[in-house]
View (cartoon, rainbow, N blue to C red):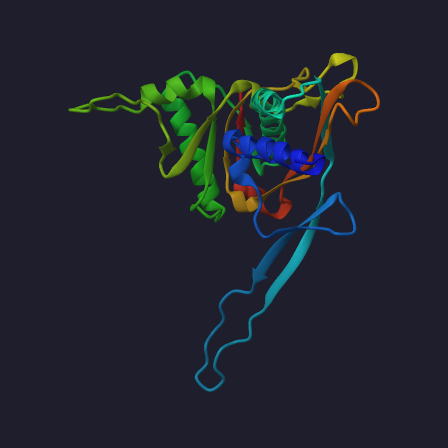
Length: 291
């Protein structure tokens, strides 16, 4: 297997692990294309139509209009890392080592960072943001119901909405939602939906109103929570109202035989991404943060 094949193999592994583990992957935008002239730009297809008019017997249907256009969004986050592995002559052992490293890198570094960045962007761009603290599960459910009603009143499509809730509030929700057991052989108290909202609990570390991305200099990697950031309680998102895209440079694998700097195998990974709330559709995102 040549270096190009190896780099693609390991890149595919990381991307597959990311898709399976990311809590925001389901928000990846559809009807999207990349600009061939500018690597920073992605374009989202937007379609608008006129409404209904009067049908007249002698004239027929009133002439409506369809407007379709590609709206550009500029990706701003360019992240990457390279890893050195001491010479391993056995390709099978090398593949196993990189595979395990890819698992650790993806699960503990890349997924938390991208999820945290996206939720912070969605909070910032939400059409309505509130701050509140819940003393009971009932007050939490009341707040979620109020959010859904607010979106309903603004004609945000109900179908497909996603509810993301801070993991620390799961016990409150469970306590407020009574469940009864009969002859079940196993007890499962997981809550996967609430009032037709697909529900996902988010680890608190990834659910902040603001984060900072570290540069990697002086051994400061990943992301941190800056002063002034608050915990997010919950976010309701209509996926049609956000743009989420990522582009990856092809992974590079340099074998120890070819590496001119050190006697090590080298693997490089890069991801270019961003997330946006579409301004004219911002009512499709409702966010609550802790007071």
